[in-house]
Amino acid sequence: MTAPQTVAEIGELGLLQRLFKYCPAALVGDDAAVLDLPAGQRLVVTTDVLVQGVHFSDRTTGPGDVGWRSVAANLSDLAAMGAAPLGITVGLSLPPTTAISWVEDLYEAMATCLKSWGGVLLGGDLCRSPMISLAITALGSAPSRGIFYRSSAQPGEVILATGYHGLSRAGLALLLSADQHQAVAAGDRQRWVQAHQRPQPRLDVVSWLRRQGWGEGITAMDSSDGLANAVLQICAASGVGASLDADNLPLDPALVEWVGLEQAMDWCLYGGEDFELILCLPRTIAQALQAYLGPESALLGQITREPAVILQSSRQPRHPGIELSLSRGFQHF
Figure 1 (cartoon, one colour):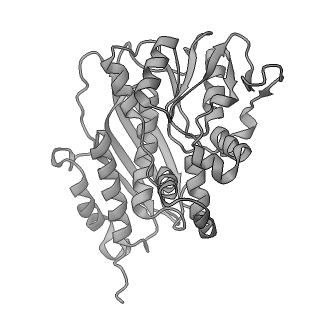
Figure 2 (cartoon, rainbow, N blue to C red):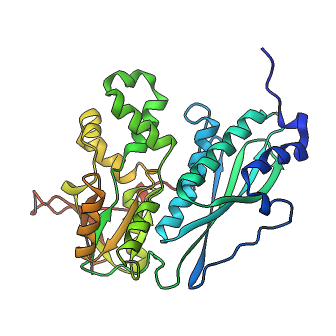
């Protein structure tokens, strides 16, 4: 069997020539890309870094999955700001022994994700490194008076989650332990692994809100670091608290059946990497959005004046509830 051709064998310029095909021809060849911003729009910029061994590994994600996830993570941040994607730049660090086919699969999936959700590959940079890492900057545009912030939540607003949470964590568990596959129906297994390897940024929610003429004053955050983290971050930024109903958490019934209610709730709140949106909305808008999204979405509770975030069961109103904390969520350090 012939060994795959490596980056070292064709060099930086040779690799660049292969990667140019993923960029619009008009943007290739200069030191920077030049973009036009539509009138009345503001530029929204986000950056995300993914490192081999921290965010991905060959055991759970192939190069195509790494490419898709890296783009989807950035587009999810744009969605949380109410922005439409314009494009991305990619800073790619590679060992010289990396197979060229690995890099091409990576870029093919990035291009496919952009084609699905909007935006183009604007360019980037290559660098030699002892391990693979990607630093992606995504650019988007949003109406000047229609940008979503974390800091605008108001007491009485309803908190909505756009989809099930805990599925990415379930998919990871299945990828790490093939022995568990037999206990899960094939359709559920495929959904959960897909949620981990190929998450879908919720730009569809932004588009729907714009079509309804809603956008100004909306509070949002993506749930890549967990549902609980998103609610806590919103409340901290807005100077408010929240009352969450444990009975309304966005749980997949199949996941509850597989791991039990307690584990499913933990993955829902703290599992992370679900890339859904958590929004704070007036009740009428929240109810309309939930009707559009369907049963996977959930009205979690509401914003309160008291600063604590309390998880309580509506079926047990006399129970004091549990105060959620950022210490349970994912943190790099």
